Amino acid sequence: MNWIAIADVISTLAFASALLFVAAIPYKTPKIGKLFKYTLLAAISLYVFVGVSNVLEHAGITAFLDTYEDFAEVLYVPLVAYVLYSRAAAERLVEAQRDEAAIRREHELLMGVVETTPAGILIADEEGGVIFENELAREILGIARPRQLDIARIVRDAPSALPREPIGDGDGRLFVSVRCRPLAPDEHGRRRAVVVLVDVTQRVRNEEELERYGKRLERDIDLRTAELLEANRQLQEAITTREDFFARMSHELRTPLNSIVGFTDVILKGLSGPLTDDQQLQLGMVKSSSRDLLEIVNDLLDIVRVEAGHTSVTLRAVDLTARMRGIAASLGAVAELHGVALTFDGPDGVMVSTDPDKLDQIARNLLSNGLKFTEKGGRVAVTVGESDGFGVVTVADTGIGIAPEDQERVFEAFEQVEAADRSQRYGTGLGLAISRELCDLLGCELAVTSALGEGSTFTLRVPREFAGASGPS
Ligand code: ADP
Image (cartoon, rainbow, N blue to C red; front, side, top):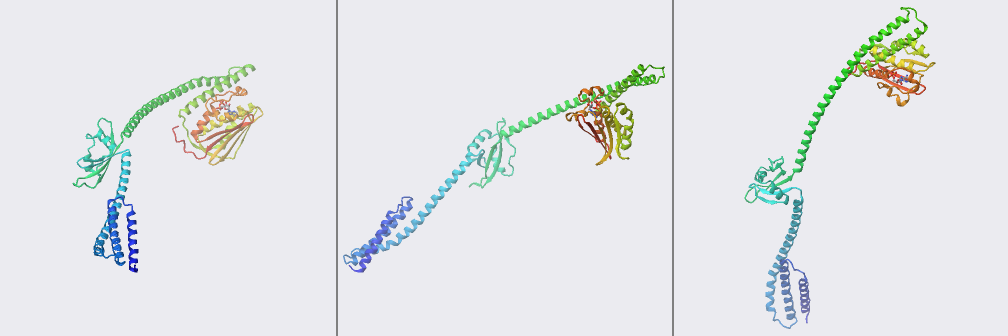
């Protein structure tokens, strides 16, 4: 065997092994893959045949196959072309299959969304033909079409004239809100659109219910307002009646009381004959009790007037120091009677803007309370000063004091602090209530600090500039 024959054997074996490898390739699907495999097998087989023929020839065994070798070589080229073609075709097919699977997955996803979405989704054309509808759309159309939902019109008008209002089905069973989006026309040039139908029945019902409720509420409010206005009118009437009653009654009481005080005075002065000591004493008591009674009547009338807002104030510049000094002096005799030292202190000319008569009334009440609730040997100190745009009057006593829990209560009408030793002191519990009300009218502030058994200090702050209360007076 020469070297050429050996080379032929090697190349033949190489082709034969290639043949085995290709035969072992698992090309089952697609079919085009099989074609590729078999044409490749045929092409390699041809060259195995050429190899065998060469080996036989070059080994000097036989040249018989040489004649057919040329056919094999000629056939080899188209076979290779087939191999290349079928390989490219197989690749395209595999790619197409992969694309199809991806499209199927996307379609599944889309259908999942379309079928589970809580809206009816349909694709329709301008003639009202439904190309696709999900289950909910089928359900809605089953109820609402054709009476209310003109699909053809919706598609034709899309998207410019969307019905924004919910559509009722006539029996009031269903309301849908419609959204629409045009698609490319179909192969016949018909317009198409995606139509989304949302069942808003519950929302519409809720809105209707809310509206009904609102109307009912409005009616109720009107009714209550009317009732309140009527109650207010009746209250005003009652206040006016009460005020009239008190005014008339106090007038009726004051006239005889003034007579009693006046005539008692006349008798006390001995103008109607001499009096025994006993008579003098008892008539003195009559006079003092009558004065107390007169005071009570005046207090009652005052509180009614102030509370009804019928008290008018006349503001002017007032010398607070002079005014307070005068009041302290006028109560000197009473202080002496009580055995209480009454002192006054303050710089001259503290000016305030107020109603002097009302200011007097407040100050007088504070001072007489101080004297009334201070034991013999005690002290009531009146001071005047100024601070932060206010003239400040303090009335400090060394009397019985007011417990912390009662300190706000004493400013309410008819409130008197319960205490054994207070029962001896006359009063109506109206003085401080009237004072507070008057303070409101005058823009003043009235406050108390006190310790039980040690004394009380009432502080009255009167504005230096005051234009008057904003509310009715
Ligand atoms: P009245 O003096 O006619 O009872 P007021 O409204 O002036 O009415 O006072 C209400 C109550 O406040 C008094 O009854 C008294 O209990 C308490 N009070 C007022 N001023 C003093 C004071 N300076 N010291 C102790 N208690 C006082």
